[in-house]
Image 1 (cartoon, rainbow, N blue to C red):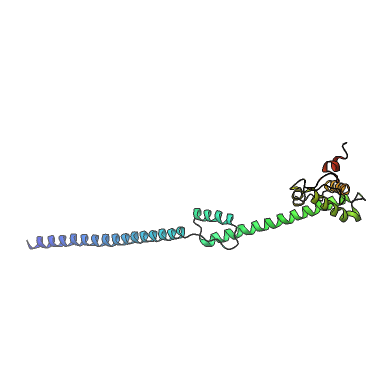
Image 2 (image 1 turned 120 degrees about the vertical axis):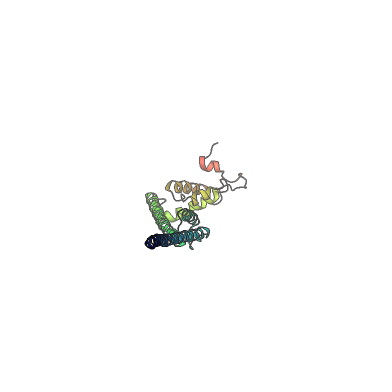
Amino acid sequence: MSGENTNTNTTGNTNTGGTGTGGTTGGATGGTTGGTETNAGSNTGAGSTQGGQNQSQPWVPPAGVDKSVAERVAADAKEFGWSSEQANKFALAISKRMGDNRTKLEADQAKARADRDAAWKADLDKDANLGGNKYEETAKSVDSAIEKMEAHAPGLKALLTDGQVSRHPAVMRLFSYLSKQMGEDKFVGGGNKSGEQQSLASLLYGDTK
């Protein structure tokens, strides 16, 4: 009887101990795992908050950045989640490249105009009566004729001068001829009578009578 009680108790203790050990292990493991999952969730939450702050803050472009560039970079920064520093670097790089291209374009255009004007002058210089030593005198008479013709053809001066074709050889030959035909007192002005002065038609086409 006494031996059976001892075995039963021993078995019971052993089983109880096993259960206890399992419980402790499970609890510790479960607790550790649970703690890890909790930390992971906490980190994810922090990342979301940071991302939300970056997206909610408006990007301010650096000084000197073209408006069209700033608008495009702002859209890209929002789409790709760029930081302000990344957006600034990209905007400045694009602006510099555009500035370099603009400077080169302006230089190329200036050279093209200079080459064109030199070619036009060389063409007129072949005419000894208009070019060479007489070029400046011819240019002044052409400008004077254009001023007078403006009364009959408003906008002509802007077309020839602003359009930068007033020094084209054909234009200079035409208005040099008209200038000589007009003289100082022969041309009919905008509101003058034509009785004692030549009309525009007679200057261009001669006497039609």
